[in-house]
Amino acid sequence: EAGVAQSPRYKIIEKRQSVAFWCNPISGHATLYWYQQILGQGPKLLIQFQNNGVVDDSQLPKDRFSAERLKGVDSTLKIQPAKLEDSAVYLCASSLMGGRNTGELFFGEGSRLTVL
Amino acid sequence: GESVGLHLPTLSVQEGDNSIINCAYSNSASDYFIWYKQESGKGPQFIIDIRSNMDKRQGQRVTVLLNKTVKHLSLQIAATQPGDSAVYFCAEGSNSGYALNFGKGTSLLVTP
Image (tube, rainbow over all chains, first blue to last red; front, side, top):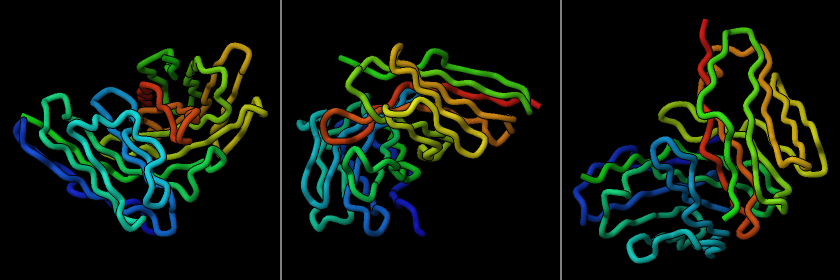
């Protein structure tokens, strides 16, 4: 079974530039998550989709971050303009259902962003 | 706000010994907990989960213990191997959106 795919793996940009990350979840997984992981910390949820609808985006900095999952499969996360503090690994995860009885989230390897 | 946290940031054990990684949580409404393992440069990988109606659950070489009275969770790894070296996170089910709230992580180093 193919895992969660993310690209690019690494990205270096200057502050105030924009960047986009792409995620392809495991086939059949209805729920998709974007997490931000700053070095030395645990992942922090940015946004959760159930199919193509947003379930939770309460921690997404909406003035600069946006995400979409138009067809309920792939998703993109965009940052515009980037700040130095956005340097982190952006992890995409998916799960079969998404309710609290779901259990396991499957994570991709992440996209490492460095903002200079 | 309420959060999930870990007691120790680093843990060093000898190969073959048992490891115990601890986690405290503060949200008394949490009823689902998961342990994840994250190796360098990779995404977190599911190890084991437990629901609040249980106090112990065992997997292959791993055991999770839940003490709801003191809001404490632990992960026990038997006969620790070099491949167990990684950062371990506990996570709880969120009250909204059903996503997971992660703690800061404990780095486990297995020495020969």
